[in-house]
Length: 576
Image (cartoon, rainbow, N blue to C red):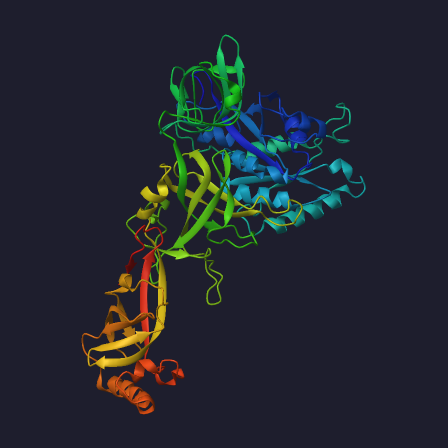
């Protein structure tokens, strides 16, 4: 994890909850060491006592028994370092929470025992479900409850929370009551926090050995940046993947520069290297820290800046709004949130469902065809109530974003009224393909075989011979009929034919029936034509009387079915 002497396991705990639930006070009560980003650099936040950016702090405890037994036998751990990622609770800053949630091993959901579950609490719960496997619920501010009713109020709230959680992945998670800052933010620090030592014991019990992989490209989420005169620029953050050592070269994609690693610290202790899950300060050769307050740092060339992306898409159940193609959503990917236009697409009808769940990478391919969708399709239709069918979304970003492949993507409607009691997280997915060319609409999108099906219907007006009929009402007068020449049509009487070309100037057209018209079709059509002739006399009466009532021509309709690829620059029509 760190250098050879260190035997400390780092475990990241996300502290999430509604604004003013006392998250920062709780983190303070738990922590012995505050890292550089900890506890709100922002003056506005300090005034109100509210967290505006991801704060980090840590404390170290003896390694619990269950980890001693499951640790790496070559290097058993002596200490367990809890890194607390204190996420903001402002509704408008939900994007920051999402940025923090991607680096946590366990979620600590802080709930004001007096107010209970609020809108942001529910949203934090959703983010937790998407990003981490375990949770502990902390009922805070128990000192505000009257002493004689305290225990019954705590039990009542615990029961209510278990009810709320029963349909989530955190069913039966532990709930513990504390008073992190008795008397509130303004109270003197002389009063001891209540229940915090019990909470530390509970956290130790909930700890597991996170899967840490030192392999693969290095990627780090930077949350703070500052310079030290004579030494260089320090970036603090959490390693999301891979590992890092002194003298490595790293890239800062946002600045398009590479820098050499001069030194690494983990909570003020120098180390020679660090790996996935570690919280580090990395000193590199000098650059202006104002250029990178937050962002990503990586192995040179490993991240891509994309203008559009294909993602797997899954609606978030609590979102009550519509998910429509062409709508714009706030897309959070990595540490960025940017607006994007969405196009939903799915498997063509009658595609056999895969018996085994496939990996996300193999489920999408450019050589497969997909059906364009006006909306996201749910499995809760009139005839079915199963899981949502497999589907994807094309995201076209308003500005390019830098991110790794296969990273978590969350779509939100952050412009929804923040005081409305509604979930603003709309859908989630995994980034499967990024379009790196600014001109992706011409160079990349035509590879995406998303099609719309089209159906047109017209009528047979009259027969010219046993193999040819004249049709109408299939096209508008101004339509260029040449692009439809050669397409197959079906007559309601059963014959198939091919459009041969236009007939006159009013949008009528000729159909060639290769197999010839059936006798009963000819009889039907000749009887309607003879009725017209009887009225008008003369061989062109069928044309002259086209304004008569349509009863004559309703008997045989013409059906044209084709599909058109949405991103085909030539707008070609294709038939099966």
